[in-house]
Image 1: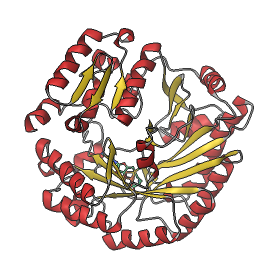
Image 2: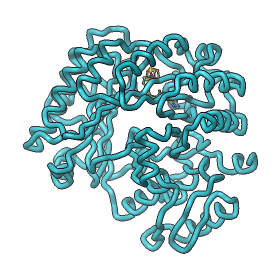
Image 3: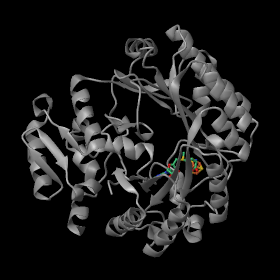
Length: 443
Ligand SMILES: C[S@@+](CC[C@H](N)C(=O)[O-])C[C@H]1O[C@@H](n2cnc3c(N)ncnc32)[C@H](O)[C@@H]1O
Ligand code: SF4
């Protein structure tokens, strides 16, 4: 196993989209983007919404998210106005109010906003909501209140994700995120009392000061609280790009086989407690919606990660938010000031994007199927690099990571950890630009 880790532990995309953001080209201008939405939209299908809330009260050193650190809550009112204005630009340009199937709040920290302000946004965005509407939100245990929890449930936000990261005090100190087990335990009691549909914990492996002992301790406490879902992320360390990560000492970081061993320990401890490995670093209890989607072969993936269902359109509101029309992607300006000035002048804040080609869509299908079902039909005739792909697949097969027939590949248990490497074989954009862009390590 160590040799395989050495061989495959290189930089690579996480494939929350294909092509990954650094490889986007031919961004649609605003009028084309709106046309793509109009062509893709069907009232019977509706669309998904994402709202980015960039604010956090305190900086976590490991953070790779788009966020603004402030303790000034006066920014809340103008921010909710901006989100409302952006949605109004969409509705006016489309000429109708789209039906909303799902609404996800991410960040930064959505619970930086008060319960009252979050409710204002939810109600504004869900005037036309589908019967099966599902809402979800990322919650920071340090600032969520019972008023927030009541507001979520009242407004259909039934899936909650808690940013836990690690329970060990030494690790928490090294990442500047002190968050006691007592705090999370009390919060879990409040959440459970309200019967939310699903509770997720975000945990990260590869953080500074993590050892076999600390991760075992963290998972003993995770297992005591028994959330329905666990996202066990690999720490993405990109200090050249993210200045906050330079506050982490290199010598404190577990690397290579040591980092992979942290993952393996967590995975084992979860399996012992009945969690199923549903795909790239995600674990679920059997009765959870993602586990059921996996069993029914309908697991899917969007910019936020795994989902049980998705619409062909996703509109992202707020700075850095990404949208998908099934014909193209766009991303909003990452800078809050630029986003604000564009929205205030009545135009969308699109700064980058990608228009899909036939080859993109073919590769997208294979990569998505591999990520969700660990198998895919492959039609190499439409792929620009079929000779290289065939030889690389042969290599992966010899290493025991996949099983391949003429037009079908299946990821073997030993290959699951290397799923990003397997997907990369079909990524012709990566091939063309390999080495130019910086991604995190695949393990
Ligand atoms: C927007 S935050 C979650 C909500 C809230 N801000 C919090 O931290 O509690 C999304 C998640 O991204 C993950 N994350 C952030 N930076 C990361 C990094 N550099 N590598 C891996 N995961 C990271 C963390 O697990 C975090 O919970
Ligand atoms: S991890 Fe969450 S709370 Fe910490 S800085 Fe990043 S977005 Fe903010």
